[in-house]
Length: 77
Image (tube, rainbow, N blue to C red; front, side, top):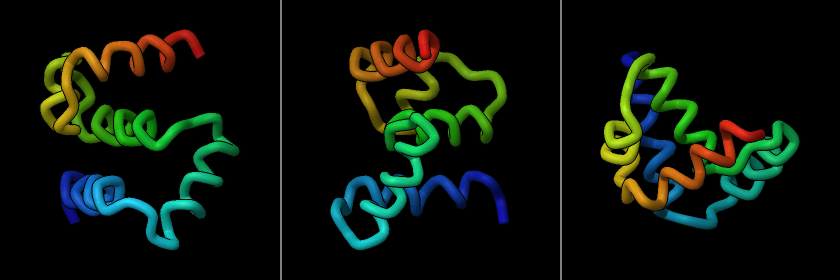
């Protein structure tokens, strides 16, 4: 299985919303000190070792202005 194939279901899960799996996954991420959007960023970085903020935003279908503060919080944390 290609790594990119792993990302699509996770993005769909985020868009579909509050199924039974999401609260469980959110709890596990909280224990790791991560939010769901931060987790998605890490997956993109795992997929593509070197990419710009604009690349990450495009892959996650987020606005560059939305992603920048999230990345700054990750970098500070």
